[in-house]
Image 1: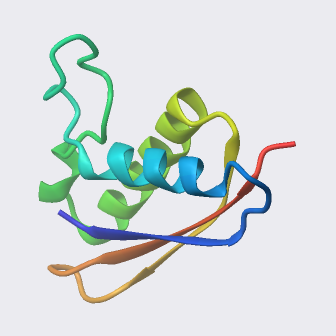
Image 2 (image 1 turned 180 degrees about the horizontal axis):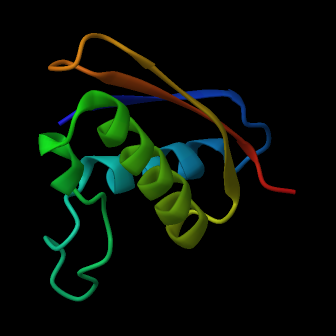
Length: 97
């Protein structure tokens, strides 16, 4: 599984802490593990895919789930570092205005 960090430098306003908390919870949760909302969290099926495919699938999942569960934030950019076995993603978010 890739490690994800959130770059919140683009967030402003009083909701900043709330948005960050919600994104961290969303990204740290495996889809299917929350009893009343099995879609909440990120799907980990892409971890067995080649790195380029895994990154593309994870990016799509991150954007889709953030729009659904944290609509007050918008994903501006996702960058990846690391080799094929140890990927680290940095998710840049801004206010969704």
